Image (tube, rainbow, N blue to C red; front, top):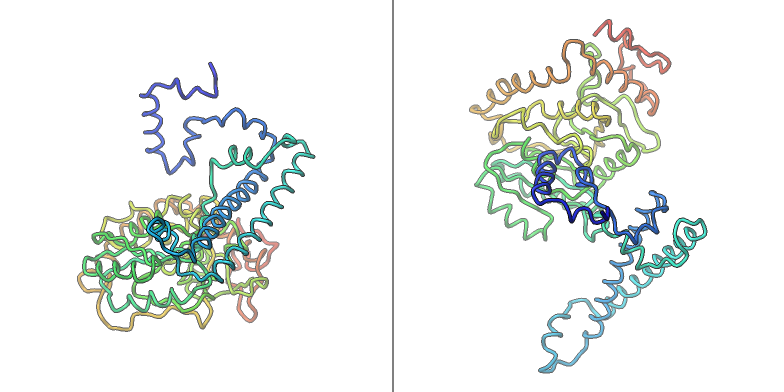
Length: 462
């Protein structure tokens, strides 16, 4: 049997079973290859010796070349038809290539794309020459051969217009907050972004629908029926295209400009293992007698020029999340509350789950000039209305808090004990202490002595 064509001999019922397994366990499977291995075309075996690290680089380069080629073709046609005299025979073509871009503008675009093509093709030829000399690929390798074997998977980050940041807003009956929030986020034009909004009340549907059009797609509304924040953020994260997700609440107005967004992205860039950066409040360690929770920052990164620190738990919102980390751990736990109930404790639970899965959590307090503004209208709304406050802050808190304690605390606080020491060592090992502030760690767990393990004392004191 030809193993390269084995899939042709698989009974339909087995294919259906394999697909059902993939659907049922999709969150734990990266691709269908993990259920049933799909073989590449046989002629691509000529590239089996290409190092894995080079495959993605070559694929990205080919994708850029093909995008530039398409842009060049279209721009040349736009120029060709720019000054054509209308006739009865060419009306359809003239209409197809009509553009508001001036001839000078088109020639500028053409020159820019030609320069890109030259750079990309030179780089590709350099790659081919280098790998041919090393024996990784045959000497007769061409661009079309590489394309046929490598372009079965694209880099979505190279798609034109892809945002880097996806803001995720949970909205419920605060029409007076809509304009300030949208205006503040759109004031940052240097970082490609999008605003995904879970419109959880029927009254706001038309306003947000109009904004989707009026902002040229910056606003992406999702309409739901009072699902509340846990399900809202999970749903929005599935639509998000940015690498960084930033959760927002409808009772806060973000700062204008790009600085705070740039700061958060620099933290993710400097610390690839960080899955979440809280910007509201935090809990530093396991021990309450450390009296370190809130907004004080005891450490800073001198290279970034930011006050920032590793912490055990962070609070909504705002909270920035690495999209890959958020999806890897399963997002927010929808089992913590019923639809329509508040998501209290879901932020702390997500923080603990990130640590347990091997990610890290940090806290960044935002600069003084970049603080979020609060709803000053005095209008009762959300979970602070008389009819909903006790339901959220008492009933729901006790239920989700019990799940949190059962999952992460148990009888021996093993995870918290471990997390406390990891947080302490990361802060002392990678950051510098803020001057004139006392050590935030109790002596019982080693204090701020980087040479002290403190684990034994922590377990005794826990």
